[in-house]
Length: 320
Ligand SMILES: [Cu+2]
Image 1 (cartoon, helix red, strand yellow):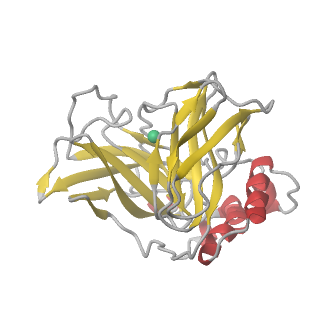
Image 2 (cartoon, helix red, strand yellow):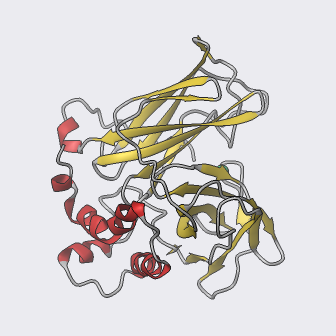
């Protein structure tokens, strides 16, 4: 399918600017190159072509859809350097700080989805996904948690947070982990995942430029699982990344925030905002018997025009 032609100027710009890092999946991306593209994305300066000028609108303002997580700075905040072990198997800490426009570490945050900061780490090929919650040293503004890498490669580290008095922000940086890199890119769309004995399916059509309803269903041993537990303010937490630039999409679970002790299943419904046609990598975290499991999926979003006759435009954004 030729999606490139439908991406529009902004998408084309992204392919040019960010596609390089992903295309280099067979090799580590030099720090200098990464710094160059992240800073260009953040500052949006020195753009010359029309394509790049369109990009000046910045993530999140593209055709009214939400794109974030492709820059180190946004909304007056910057993600500082990420410190982490340099190669697989070395035990250490992963740490960083968020700084404000004045360069001061941010020490006060608001809780969203049950936590003050959500840390998503994924290798550039979409593998090795982790969703964790580091601890804040409220004196220094340093976030940290014990950390060991399983495999070499270039990783994207996303901090999804709401600073006190601010709005929800997602910033990202890349971290290089030395060693021989064996890529594990997705081979095609994937609507079914088997994880820790659970069979999880996802259905629904991702349509660019609108809220797309996605339903996940969890089974175990052929039986529907009706004992999904609340996790991060919902009965599941879905993260979606755009293949290529690994832009971080906004996904909302439907329904009221569950209370402790509530159970649900086997289905959980989400609304995802796919900004463009193309491929998306999705990761569902769900909790059963106190344990969190992660099911990965790969979906292709169609251009909105292709879908005009069947899509009702139902835009349920749900609660955040
Ligand atoms: Cu989280």
